[in-house]
Amino acid sequence: MKYDEFKRQLGKAGLSIKAFTMLVKVSASTISNYKKNGEVPSHWAIIALLMGEMADNNLDFRNILSKIDIEPNKVRGAAAKGRFGGSKQTDLLI
Image 1 (cartoon, rainbow, N blue to C red):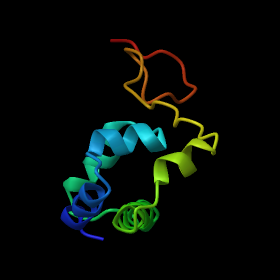
Image 2: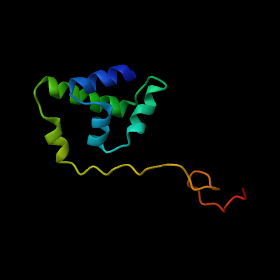
Image 3: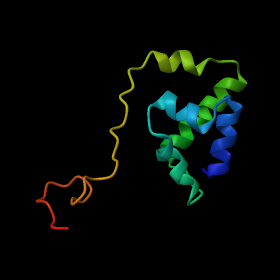
Image 4: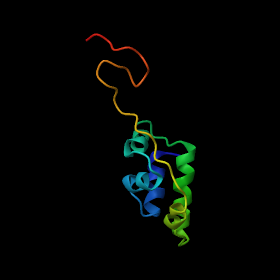
């Protein structure tokens, strides 16, 4: 799905990117990074499409999602100075 169509489906559901990421418990950058190549992975596209269709049919997807214990994604931020992205290695001399 194209990123613009993804945003349109979220809009039909009354959601911004930020509100969507809060519902599905991922960081906003996880979703907004897809704007760069213009495509959204199928699993996010399916969720957005279903939310949009549910909203069009006056079905409350928020109530349904609240019944699921969604584990938030672990943040994969910057590594500590002198280390590469979280790999188990010795400190580099800088």
